[in-house]
Structure formats: structure tokens, C-alpha cells
Length: 219
Picture: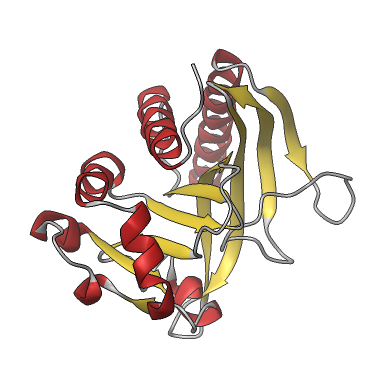
């Protein structure tokens, strides 16, 4: 009986998650494809640091919104922890095509998460190092919320793109979600199983704000 209740609860939560994500995708005009099999289906999988040979993509949706090409996916995978054990992790990913050349590869990693959802980032990208101490004129509040990982040789370009007002805005609008920029793509990661319509809407608004600040679209 206990196992049946647990199974029913998981099934109910999965259906609620599916309804929430599909309704959100529909509300902003994305085309919803649902579950995708990376080794069987012909589709351009969203990359970013969570991409692996074992990840599973559900609730995949694509489209254009407010002038930006956007993709959304619900990704899960089993990730090795520092202890050697593997744990199940789940993320909602937003991907926005910035069409912005020469963007350095960098991460905004929320503090306190290095041993959890983002452990694989630190092991898979050893060339990226914390650069917070090298940045000038940024708020202590931001540095208490995020660690920026990048190549130190890209510092000048990063400070050129990420001014103090923009850095402050990121800390206020995105925490505790992670951000990645790579190959002209902006990725926003929402870890964990709990989602809501409000969370998706506020994250989308913040993502569009950042995308439009970095790569403005004509009205």
C-alpha cells in the first residue's frame, strides 16, 4: 500500500509538471514536441553543461518570442557526486540564441551549489576558473549570490559586456538559477523538481531582459 501511494504521488506530480510546461510553452507561442530521444530522434538537442550521452529530454519546445529564437526542455540525468555515488538531477533549461559573436564562455553559478547540481561543471570544465576577485566595481550582494567562472584571459571582454548595473540585475533577477553563455547561446538552468507557472513566467521575463540587454532587438 505504501509503495502504491508513493507511485501514485509520483505519477500525479509528473502529470502536473507536464501540464504546467505544455501550458507555458503554448502561452508564449512555442511548438511543443514533448519527449525526445537523443539517440533515436532527429532533433538538435540543447547543449550546455547538462548535455551528456545519458541525459533524457522531456517537454521539448521551440519557437520565437519577442524577437528571439527560444528553446525549452525538461532534462534529467544521473550525475556522479564527489562521494562517488550517482544522484538523479533534473533541470528546466531555457536556451536563447543571442546572435552575438565573440561571447566568452562563462557561467554564473549560484553559491552553495558546487556539490550538487553543478558538481559536474567543475569537473568537466577545469579551464574555467572563479574570477569574482578580478572584477571591479560590483556589488557585495552579487558576489554573495554568484560565482562567475571563465577564463581569466577573457576578463576584459566580460567586464565590457557585464557592466555593474547588469551584474546587479542578474543577482537580483536570477538567483538561485544558473546562467551559461557559450557559442552565442544563453542558457538558464532551473534545478529541482518543483516548478510553477509563476516561476516559469518570471524566469522567462528575466531571461528576455538579459538577452535583450546583451543583444538588443529592434522594435
